[in-house]
Length: 117
Length: 107
Image 1: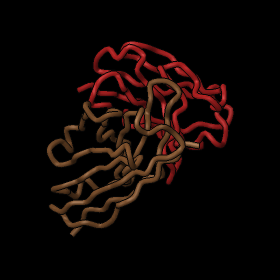
Image 2 (image 1 turned 90 degrees about the vertical axis):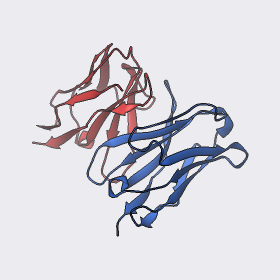
Image 3 (image 1 turned 135 degrees about the horizontal axis):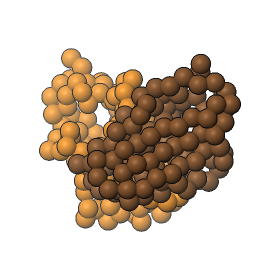
């Protein structure tokens, strides 16, 4: 069974940093591209970032480019999101997701990041 | 960047009604589109991929159509468990973009 479990969310002050992790199991993690998607309270879904299976291809939403860094450790079956220079508008539930063009579609339960003084 | 314009933003419908939700892309995305259902406090769940293919385990009352720039999600006979928010997602080019969402409420 595919499982994605996010961790690392919490309360952080504006301008601060936070690192999210996503532990993957139930599939060969090293062969799949992975995504982060977020959802601000009461708002819609926003795609944040993608990393390919062996990391040569990385993409970001314009809203986080230059502040967030996606990475992965295939030996640890883990996906990461380093978030710097956080703003109030980054407050959201962050989901780790494996989204493929055909059958693949798996999401974690999400982790809440709150940016507030 | 590709913009996805989803309509309506909300609708009220009764059990048994036929419901249609539309997404329009700002440029040709072929059939690189999925439809998601999200219930409060839960992760999104994909219903349709490649614009018109039903995800495994999804009831056949859900269907998708379209290609290029115009896409439609149809629920042929709305059931109580279908009251939720629906989103389209284009994955033709980065950055991927979601539609703004359609909240389906009980009339």
